[in-house]
Picture 1 (cartoon, rainbow, N blue to C red):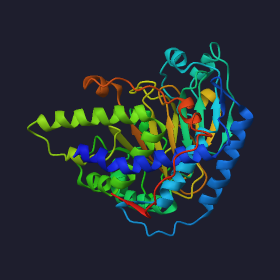
Picture 2: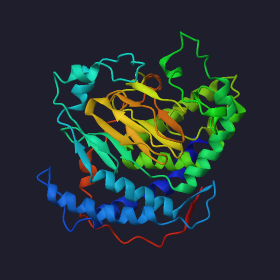
Picture 3: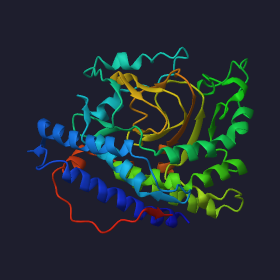
Picture 4: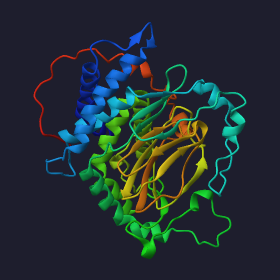
Length: 398
C-alpha cells in the first residue's frame, strides 16, 4: 500500500513541478543568477510578475465542485503560484545553519510566553536578524543558500480548508476528554496554554498526537478523511524540499515493513497517509517558545494552520519574525534550529496539524538525514523557458 502512496502522488507531484518550473521560467526574460550571485533587480521584477498572478488567483473563486477524492486544477494553480512566489522572495540571514545548529542549546520553554534566553545568547556568535512582520510567501535562507523555512500563506483553497475543519470537528470530544486538569502541577508545557472556548467550541482544546492514538477508530476515520489532503501536502513537500520527501518516504516504507513482521498489530499502518511519521493536532492552545528536540536540523516540521476566523501569529525568536498564521497557511520550518511560538490570537478558534519526523526513527531504519533545500535549485529556473505542456484536466483524481 505504501507503494500506492508514492504512485498516486506522482501525478500531483509532476503537475506541481512542471507548473512551478513554467511560472518561474516565464517570470523573467533572463536568469537572475550571475556567477552564482543573485541579481536583486531582476529577482524583484520576477517576484512582481508572479505576485500579480497570485493575487488574481486568490481573488478568483474555485468553481469546480469539491470532492474529498480529487485535487482541482484551481488548487494546483494556487499552490504553484504560492510556492513560486516564496522561492523568489528569499529573506537572508548572515549565518551558517549548521554552525548555528551546533551552538543551539535546547532549553525548557518559559510558561509566561516569552522567548528563552537562547536567542539572546546566540547573538554573541552570529549577526542578529530583525525581520519583523511577514505576510507574503517567502523563504528564509542562510548565507550559503540553504533554505531554513518555507512560508506559504493562503495556500489552501477555502473549500479544502472548510472540508478539513469539518472533518476535524469530529475529534472535539476526544480532544476535550484528554484535557489535563488545571490543578495538575506536573503536566508538561505541551499540556498548558489552552484557550478553551465557551462550551468547548467547535473543536475543543488539547493536543492529540494521532500517530500515538492510531488505534483509535475516530483517529483512523479522521486520517481517512484527510487522505487526499495529505497526498496534496506530501506533493507540496516534494516540490519545496525534495530530499525531505525522499527521506520521509524511505523511512515510512521501512517502518511499515517492520510493523508487518510483528504478529500483534491492530492498526492499519498501510493506510497512514503522510510521509511524516508523526502528526499532532493542536486545538485552541497557545504554544510556548521552543525548539523541537526529536528531529535533526534538516528534518523540517510541516505546520498546517486550520480553524476559523482567527488571526494567529507564528513568532520566530531567533530572527525576530512575526508570520501571519491565519487559516490556510502552511509553514515548513527547521524546528530544531529556529525557536518558534504562537501566542494569544484575536477571534475565532485555532487548529494546527503539526507534522514531524523523528531522527531516532530514521536512524533505526538506516535512513540518512536529508540535506537542506537549496535556493539556487529554484532560482536557476527563473527565465528558463519550459517546453509547451499538454492539455490539462479539471481535476486530478486520486
